[in-house]
Length: 46
Image (cartoon, rainbow, N blue to C red; front, side):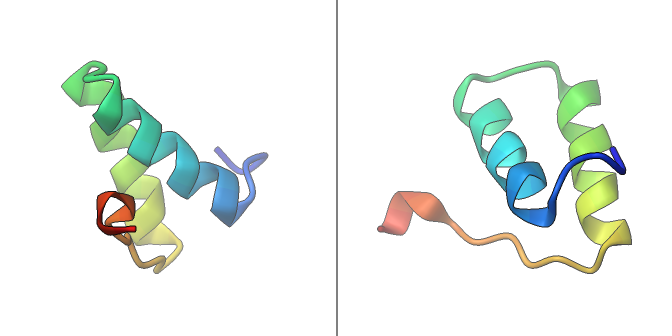
């Protein structure tokens, strides 16, 4: 995960949600987002 930029990590998370990928994978992304103290925005509102 360290290779992903913050932007790429957030985009990956949103895409994983959109594609309804495995919960374990989404949880892994989410854990890294929290570790980096990033804010998740709801792109569906744009």
